[in-house]
Amino acid sequence: MSDSIRIPLHPSVSQEDFEAMTYESNWAMESIQQKTDELPFETEWSTRDGKATINYVRDDLLEVDYVVVRGKGARATADHVRSELRTVSVDDALAAAKKARSDDDRLEALYHAVLAAEKADPRVMELMEAALANKDPEVRRGAIFAAGYAEWKALKEPLERVARDDEDAEIREDAEAMLEGLAKVWKSRSK
Image (cartoon, rainbow, N blue to C red; front, side):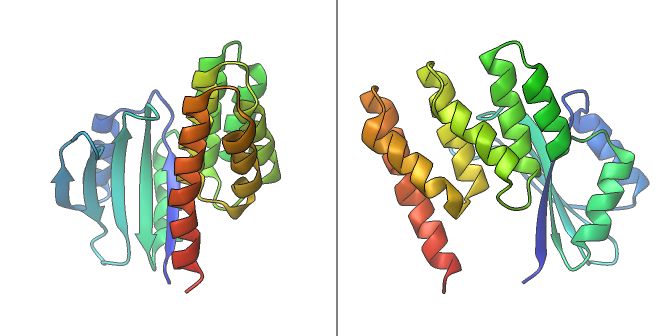
């Protein structure tokens, strides 16, 4: 199986900045997916040597733009993206969470951390658990959405707790739906 690496872009990086980098890198555009009710706007590029594909995603649900790099050349290509564009690492996201003055800022930091983490990171899990326990139901809902991007089995217990104990019926339903979706992902990975 080839690597798949997500790289959250710093909010200051525009689609035009990304496309300028692809031009300078001599990558070929493969496809454009216009935004729909179910899917985000996405462009797909490939390296000239064919060792990696690069997807630019404008995710309106999370309000975060990120890049997904896949293929045998994913590591080198991801390193290239990080060297050419301002990106957000797990450490950057955790620092932003500590400095956050609002729940919106904390959620943005959580989204960046989840997208940047290549595996379950205890520091990101701590941030996730804090968001799942936040007094604001919209923050809890945002954390549930973030769990769908992380897909970590370590999220099972915290999501089960929310599905069982949250005071808001809609949040309990959202957590249960996320658990059902993640169970399918986890099952497919165990085959």
